[in-house]
Length: 331
Ligand code: G3H
Ligand code: 13P
Ligand code: ZN
Image (cartoon, rainbow, N blue to C red; front, top):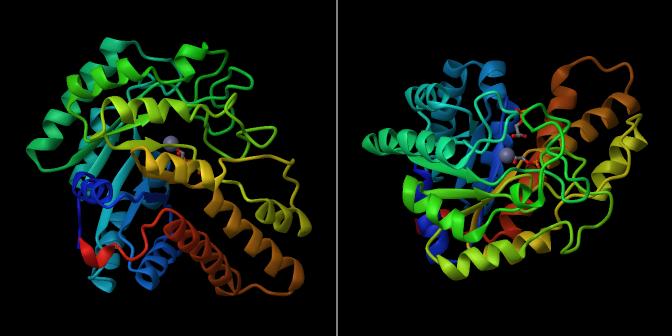
Protein backbone atom coordinates (compact mmCIF):
# COMPACT_ATOMS: atom_id res chain seq x y z
CA UNK A 1 0.00 0.00 0.00
CA UNK A 2 1.03 3.61 -0.49
CA UNK A 3 2.27 5.59 2.50
CA UNK A 4 3.38 9.19 2.90
CA UNK A 5 6.87 10.14 4.02
CA UNK A 6 5.48 11.67 7.22
CA UNK A 7 3.63 8.50 8.20
CA UNK A 8 6.64 6.33 7.50
CA UNK A 9 9.22 8.53 9.23
CA UNK A 10 6.99 9.03 12.27
CA UNK A 11 6.93 5.25 12.64
CA UNK A 12 10.69 5.07 12.10
CA UNK A 13 11.28 7.68 14.80
CA UNK A 14 9.02 5.90 17.22
CA UNK A 15 10.87 2.62 16.66
CA UNK A 16 14.43 3.99 16.22
CA UNK A 17 15.17 2.93 12.67
CA UNK A 18 16.12 4.55 9.38
CA UNK A 19 14.70 4.05 5.90
CA UNK A 20 16.93 3.91 2.85
CA UNK A 21 15.53 5.97 -0.03
CA UNK A 22 16.65 4.32 -3.24
CA UNK A 23 16.56 6.07 -6.61
CA UNK A 24 15.01 4.36 -9.59
CA UNK A 25 15.01 4.97 -13.32
CA UNK A 26 13.73 1.67 -14.63
CA UNK A 27 11.82 -1.54 -13.96
CA UNK A 28 14.84 -3.58 -12.91
CA UNK A 29 15.66 -1.14 -10.10
CA UNK A 30 12.04 -1.01 -8.91
CA UNK A 31 11.81 -4.80 -8.85
CA UNK A 32 15.13 -5.11 -7.03
CA UNK A 33 13.97 -2.80 -4.23
CA UNK A 34 10.61 -4.54 -3.91
CA UNK A 35 12.12 -8.02 -3.86
CA UNK A 36 14.54 -6.95 -1.12
CA UNK A 37 11.71 -5.35 0.87
CA UNK A 38 9.51 -8.40 0.52
CA UNK A 39 12.27 -10.77 1.65
CA UNK A 40 12.99 -8.66 4.72
CA UNK A 41 9.55 -7.25 5.56
CA UNK A 42 10.79 -3.68 5.10
CA UNK A 43 8.86 -0.54 4.13
CA UNK A 44 10.38 1.34 1.19
CA UNK A 45 11.00 4.83 -0.11
CA UNK A 46 11.35 4.76 -3.87
CA UNK A 47 12.49 8.07 -5.27
CA UNK A 48 12.74 9.53 -8.74
CA UNK A 49 14.87 12.52 -9.68
CA UNK A 50 13.86 15.00 -12.36
CA UNK A 51 16.26 13.13 -14.62
CA UNK A 52 14.56 9.83 -13.81
CA UNK A 53 11.15 11.25 -14.68
CA UNK A 54 12.52 12.49 -17.99
CA UNK A 55 14.18 9.16 -18.68
CA UNK A 56 11.28 6.88 -17.80
CA UNK A 57 8.22 9.11 -18.42
CA UNK A 58 5.77 9.97 -15.62
CA UNK A 59 3.10 7.64 -16.95
CA UNK A 60 5.51 4.72 -17.00
CA UNK A 61 6.68 5.53 -13.47
CA UNK A 62 3.13 5.89 -12.20
CA UNK A 63 2.06 2.53 -13.55
CA UNK A 64 5.29 0.94 -12.37
CA UNK A 65 4.61 2.15 -8.83
CA UNK A 66 1.02 0.87 -9.11
CA UNK A 67 2.41 -2.47 -10.24
CA UNK A 68 4.84 -2.60 -7.30
CA UNK A 69 1.94 -1.99 -4.90
CA UNK A 70 -0.15 -4.63 -6.63
CA UNK A 71 2.59 -7.27 -6.66
CA UNK A 72 3.63 -6.56 -3.05
CA UNK A 73 0.44 -5.43 -1.25
CA UNK A 74 2.02 -6.04 2.16
CA UNK A 75 4.84 -3.52 1.65
CA UNK A 76 4.25 0.17 2.54
CA UNK A 77 5.59 2.20 -0.40
CA UNK A 78 6.45 5.89 -0.26
CA UNK A 79 6.96 7.34 -3.75
CA UNK A 80 9.10 10.44 -3.46
CA UNK A 81 10.29 13.22 -5.78
CA UNK A 82 14.05 13.55 -5.26
CA UNK A 83 15.44 17.13 -5.49
CA UNK A 84 12.43 18.97 -6.82
CA UNK A 85 13.79 22.36 -7.95
CA UNK A 86 10.53 24.31 -7.95
CA UNK A 87 6.75 24.17 -7.52
CA UNK A 88 6.11 22.89 -11.06
CA UNK A 89 8.26 19.81 -10.55
CA UNK A 90 6.65 19.11 -7.19
CA UNK A 91 3.05 19.61 -8.32
CA UNK A 92 3.43 17.43 -11.44
CA UNK A 93 4.97 14.73 -9.24
CA UNK A 94 1.86 14.85 -7.04
CA UNK A 95 -0.29 14.53 -10.17
CA UNK A 96 1.72 11.45 -11.10
CA UNK A 97 0.84 9.82 -7.79
CA UNK A 98 3.90 10.59 -5.66
CA UNK A 99 3.11 10.61 -1.94
CA UNK A 100 6.02 12.87 -1.05
CA UNK A 101 8.13 15.56 -2.68
CA UNK A 102 11.43 17.21 -1.96
CA UNK A 103 11.38 20.94 -2.50
CA UNK A 104 15.10 21.63 -2.64
CA UNK A 105 15.36 25.37 -2.24
CA UNK A 106 18.97 25.30 -1.06
CA UNK A 107 19.89 26.21 -4.62
CA UNK A 108 17.94 28.40 -7.04
CA UNK A 109 15.85 26.80 -9.76
CA UNK A 110 18.93 26.56 -12.05
CA UNK A 111 20.40 24.09 -9.56
CA UNK A 112 23.66 26.05 -9.42
CA UNK A 113 23.19 29.26 -7.47
CA UNK A 114 23.07 29.00 -3.67
CA UNK A 115 19.78 30.49 -2.48
CA UNK A 116 19.36 32.97 0.34
CA UNK A 117 17.18 32.44 3.40
CA UNK A 118 14.04 34.13 2.10
CA UNK A 119 14.12 32.37 -1.29
CA UNK A 120 14.41 28.98 0.37
CA UNK A 121 11.80 29.66 3.06
CA UNK A 122 9.25 31.18 0.69
CA UNK A 123 9.38 28.54 -2.02
CA UNK A 124 9.50 25.66 0.46
CA UNK A 125 6.60 27.01 2.52
CA UNK A 126 4.53 27.54 -0.62
CA UNK A 127 5.03 23.96 -1.82
CA UNK A 128 4.49 22.60 1.70
CA UNK A 129 1.21 24.47 2.20
CA UNK A 130 -0.12 23.16 -1.12
CA UNK A 131 1.15 19.61 -0.65
CA UNK A 132 -0.37 19.33 2.80
CA UNK A 133 -3.78 20.27 1.42
CA UNK A 134 -3.60 17.05 -0.56
CA UNK A 135 -2.05 14.94 2.21
CA UNK A 136 1.37 14.84 0.52
CA UNK A 137 4.59 15.10 2.54
CA UNK A 138 7.46 17.51 1.90
CA UNK A 139 11.20 17.30 2.47
CA UNK A 140 13.15 20.56 2.50
CA UNK A 141 16.90 21.18 2.40
CA UNK A 142 18.89 23.65 4.43
CA UNK A 143 22.60 23.98 3.68
CA UNK A 144 24.39 23.16 0.43
CA UNK A 145 25.81 19.71 -0.29
CA UNK A 146 29.50 19.74 -1.08
CA UNK A 147 32.98 18.73 -0.08
CA UNK A 148 34.61 19.93 3.13
CA UNK A 149 37.94 18.76 1.71
CA UNK A 150 37.93 21.17 -1.22
CA UNK A 151 35.19 23.64 -0.31
CA UNK A 152 33.56 22.82 -3.62
CA UNK A 153 29.95 22.09 -4.38
CA UNK A 154 29.19 19.04 -6.42
CA UNK A 155 31.12 18.58 -9.59
CA UNK A 156 30.06 15.49 -11.27
CA UNK A 157 26.31 15.17 -11.42
CA UNK A 158 25.07 18.46 -12.76
CA UNK A 159 22.93 19.58 -9.85
CA UNK A 160 25.60 21.14 -7.76
CA UNK A 161 27.06 24.56 -7.27
CA UNK A 162 30.19 25.18 -9.33
CA UNK A 163 32.97 26.88 -7.43
CA UNK A 164 33.95 27.51 -3.85
CA UNK A 165 31.51 27.66 -0.98
CA UNK A 166 32.14 28.77 2.57
CA UNK A 167 32.23 26.32 5.44
CA UNK A 168 29.03 27.97 6.74
CA UNK A 169 27.21 27.18 3.50
CA UNK A 170 28.46 23.59 3.39
CA UNK A 171 27.59 22.76 6.99
CA UNK A 172 24.02 23.31 8.16
CA UNK A 173 23.70 25.70 11.09
CA UNK A 174 21.57 23.89 13.69
CA UNK A 175 19.71 26.93 15.05
CA UNK A 176 18.87 28.25 11.58
CA UNK A 177 17.81 24.77 10.46
CA UNK A 178 15.30 24.58 13.29
CA UNK A 179 14.02 28.07 12.45
CA UNK A 180 13.66 26.90 8.85
CA UNK A 181 11.59 23.87 9.81
CA UNK A 182 9.28 26.00 11.94
CA UNK A 183 8.91 28.64 9.24
CA UNK A 184 8.11 26.18 6.45
CA UNK A 185 6.30 23.27 8.11
CA UNK A 186 8.31 20.62 6.24
CA UNK A 187 7.94 17.01 7.32
CA UNK A 188 11.62 16.20 6.99
CA UNK A 189 14.81 18.17 6.51
CA UNK A 190 17.87 17.38 4.43
CA UNK A 191 20.98 18.76 6.02
CA UNK A 192 24.47 19.44 4.73
CA UNK A 193 27.45 18.04 6.61
CA UNK A 194 30.08 17.21 4.02
CA UNK A 195 28.49 14.56 1.85
CA UNK A 196 27.99 15.04 -1.86
CA UNK A 197 26.30 13.07 -4.63
CA UNK A 198 28.08 10.49 -6.75
CA UNK A 199 31.05 8.20 -6.18
CA UNK A 200 33.77 10.79 -5.53
CA UNK A 201 32.89 12.09 -2.08
CA UNK A 202 36.14 11.78 -0.13
CA UNK A 203 39.80 11.18 -1.01
CA UNK A 204 40.27 9.15 2.18
CA UNK A 205 38.15 7.40 4.77
CA UNK A 206 36.25 10.34 6.27
CA UNK A 207 36.79 11.56 9.82
CA UNK A 208 35.16 14.41 11.74
CA UNK A 209 37.09 17.02 9.76
CA UNK A 210 35.38 16.17 6.49
CA UNK A 211 32.15 14.53 7.66
CA UNK A 212 30.45 16.77 10.22
CA UNK A 213 28.20 14.26 11.98
CA UNK A 214 28.15 16.44 15.11
CA UNK A 215 25.67 18.73 13.33
CA UNK A 216 23.14 15.91 13.37
CA UNK A 217 23.62 15.32 17.06
CA UNK A 218 23.24 19.00 17.84
CA UNK A 219 20.05 19.39 15.80
CA UNK A 220 18.59 16.24 17.34
CA UNK A 221 19.31 17.50 20.82
CA UNK A 222 17.61 20.83 20.10
CA UNK A 223 14.65 19.41 18.16
CA UNK A 224 14.24 15.69 18.91
CA UNK A 225 11.06 15.31 16.86
CA UNK A 226 12.66 16.44 13.58
CA UNK A 227 13.16 13.81 10.88
CA UNK A 228 16.54 14.40 9.24
CA UNK A 229 17.58 13.26 5.78
CA UNK A 230 21.12 12.37 4.79
CA UNK A 231 21.81 12.88 1.08
CA UNK A 232 24.86 11.57 -0.70
CA UNK A 233 24.84 8.56 1.60
CA UNK A 234 26.27 5.87 -0.62
CA UNK A 235 29.12 4.02 1.02
CA UNK A 236 30.89 3.37 -2.31
CA UNK A 237 32.00 -0.10 -1.15
CA UNK A 238 35.52 -1.17 -2.04
CA UNK A 239 34.36 -4.52 -3.41
CA UNK A 240 32.09 -2.79 -5.93
CA UNK A 241 34.93 -0.52 -7.05
CA UNK A 242 37.07 -3.64 -7.43
CA UNK A 243 34.49 -5.57 -9.48
CA UNK A 244 34.00 -2.66 -11.86
CA UNK A 245 37.76 -2.24 -12.29
CA UNK A 246 38.40 -5.98 -12.59
CA UNK A 247 36.12 -6.13 -15.63
CA UNK A 248 37.39 -3.24 -17.70
CA UNK A 249 36.14 -0.27 -15.65
CA UNK A 250 38.36 2.67 -14.79
CA UNK A 251 37.11 4.17 -11.55
CA UNK A 252 39.76 6.05 -9.56
CA UNK A 253 40.03 5.01 -5.90
CA UNK A 254 37.47 6.81 -3.77
CA UNK A 255 35.64 6.77 -0.41
CA UNK A 256 31.99 7.14 0.51
CA UNK A 257 30.05 7.44 3.76
CA UNK A 258 30.85 4.58 6.15
CA UNK A 259 27.74 2.63 7.19
CA UNK A 260 28.67 3.04 10.86
CA UNK A 261 28.44 6.83 10.49
CA UNK A 262 24.93 6.48 9.08
CA UNK A 263 24.04 4.18 11.97
CA UNK A 264 25.29 6.86 14.33
CA UNK A 265 23.05 9.34 12.51
CA UNK A 266 20.04 7.04 12.94
CA UNK A 267 20.63 7.12 16.70
CA UNK A 268 20.30 10.91 16.47
CA UNK A 269 17.26 11.57 14.31
CA UNK A 270 18.31 10.61 10.78
CA UNK A 271 15.30 8.77 9.33
CA UNK A 272 15.76 8.89 5.54
CA UNK A 273 19.03 7.92 3.90
CA UNK A 274 19.43 8.64 0.19
CA UNK A 275 21.29 6.01 -1.82
CA UNK A 276 21.73 5.88 -5.57
CA UNK A 277 25.43 5.49 -6.38
CA UNK A 278 25.92 2.16 -4.55
CA UNK A 279 23.11 0.64 -6.60
CA UNK A 280 24.44 2.10 -9.84
CA UNK A 281 27.82 0.56 -9.07
CA UNK A 282 26.32 -2.83 -8.19
CA UNK A 283 24.43 -2.84 -11.49
CA UNK A 284 27.42 -1.74 -13.55
CA UNK A 285 29.78 -4.24 -11.91
CA UNK A 286 27.39 -7.12 -12.61
CA UNK A 287 26.85 -6.12 -16.23
CA UNK A 288 30.58 -5.67 -16.87
CA UNK A 289 31.24 -9.09 -15.39
CA UNK A 290 28.67 -10.91 -17.52
CA UNK A 291 29.69 -9.19 -20.73
CA UNK A 292 33.40 -9.67 -20.09
CA UNK A 293 33.02 -13.34 -19.26
CA UNK A 294 30.52 -13.98 -22.05
CA UNK A 295 31.44 -11.69 -24.93
CA UNK A 296 29.15 -13.57 -27.30
CA UNK A 297 26.07 -12.88 -25.14
CA UNK A 298 23.44 -10.50 -26.49
CA UNK A 299 20.24 -11.29 -24.59
CA UNK A 300 19.73 -8.30 -22.23
CA UNK A 301 18.06 -10.51 -19.63
CA UNK A 302 21.36 -12.35 -19.24
CA UNK A 303 22.98 -9.25 -17.78
CA UNK A 304 19.96 -7.30 -16.47
CA UNK A 305 18.92 -10.13 -14.15
CA UNK A 306 22.36 -10.37 -12.46
CA UNK A 307 22.39 -6.56 -12.35
CA UNK A 308 19.03 -6.47 -10.59
CA UNK A 309 20.18 -9.26 -8.23
CA UNK A 310 23.32 -7.28 -7.34
CA UNK A 311 21.21 -4.22 -6.57
CA UNK A 312 18.80 -6.32 -4.50
CA UNK A 313 21.76 -7.49 -2.40
CA UNK A 314 22.80 -3.90 -1.62
CA UNK A 315 19.21 -2.94 -0.80
CA UNK A 316 18.89 -5.85 1.59
CA UNK A 317 22.18 -4.96 3.28
CA UNK A 318 21.09 -1.39 3.92
CA UNK A 319 17.63 -2.47 5.13
CA UNK A 320 19.35 -4.70 7.66
CA UNK A 321 21.99 -2.14 8.65
CA UNK A 322 19.40 0.62 9.18
CA UNK A 323 16.97 -1.72 11.02
CA UNK A 324 14.28 -1.21 8.38
CA UNK A 325 13.97 -4.97 8.13
CA UNK A 326 11.01 -6.42 10.01
CA UNK A 327 9.13 -3.11 10.21
CA UNK A 328 6.67 -3.34 7.30
CA UNK A 329 4.20 -5.58 9.08
CA UNK A 330 4.30 -3.34 12.16
CA UNK A 331 3.10 -0.23 10.36
O1 G3H B 1 20.39 13.44 -6.71
C1 G3H B 1 21.09 12.53 -7.13
C2 G3H B 1 20.56 11.23 -7.50
O2 G3H B 1 21.62 10.31 -7.52
C3 G3H B 1 19.83 11.26 -8.84
O3 G3H B 1 20.70 11.50 -9.88
O4 G3H B 1 19.75 13.34 -11.26
O5 G3H B 1 21.36 11.67 -12.22
O6 G3H B 1 19.00 11.01 -11.68
P1 G3H B 1 20.17 11.90 -11.34
P1 13P C 1 24.54 9.00 -3.56
O1 13P C 1 25.08 9.57 -4.84
O2 13P C 1 25.57 9.04 -2.47
O3 13P C 1 23.98 7.66 -3.74
O4 13P C 1 23.36 9.98 -3.06
C1 13P C 1 22.08 9.93 -3.64
C2 13P C 1 21.22 11.08 -3.23
O5 13P C 1 21.49 11.82 -2.32
C3 13P C 1 19.97 11.27 -4.00
O6 13P C 1 19.28 12.41 -3.59
ZN1 ZN D 1 20.40 14.06 -2.95
